[in-house]
Amino acid sequence: MVAHAHAATEMPPVDENVALYEVPVEPGVTYEDVILSLKVVSEGMNFVNPANFPIADHLKARDQDPKGILEVRAFCNLSLGADIFLDHPEFVVFAPCRIGIYQRNGQLYLALDRPTYDLKSIKNPTQRAQNAAKILEQSLMKIIDKARRGEI
Image: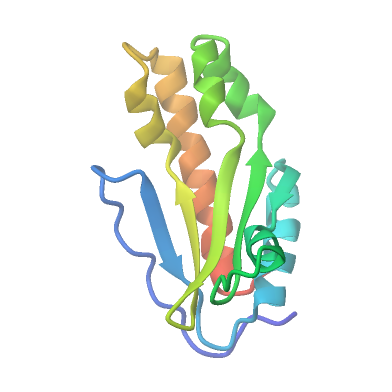
């Protein structure tokens, strides 16, 4: 895969009041490009992909039209996660981190559930947990930034 010739748009700003962070996939980048990029980039950043949830396939099996791609891919970086789990084991309900891949009105998107937002659900999070959630979120945003451009 080759980086696409056009200049990529900037990543949208984060809305601190919303858990969802969504980015459109760049023109000319295919679903296959996105998947390969997610795999290569995440592994290079010490993330594992323990599970994928092909929601569109399950809807089709029930004779429902998902209107395109609809799936969730789970990613885990246990060294970062441990810094949160050791202080707040209840944070495990937000693990592993999830990246959604879906189509809306023909446009392919990537989205994630922001760890820093999820940490707001924990009473009095430690500084260690806050720092780890911030690094985890920045890492996931880097992964989806590269994936939306089809970079490996």
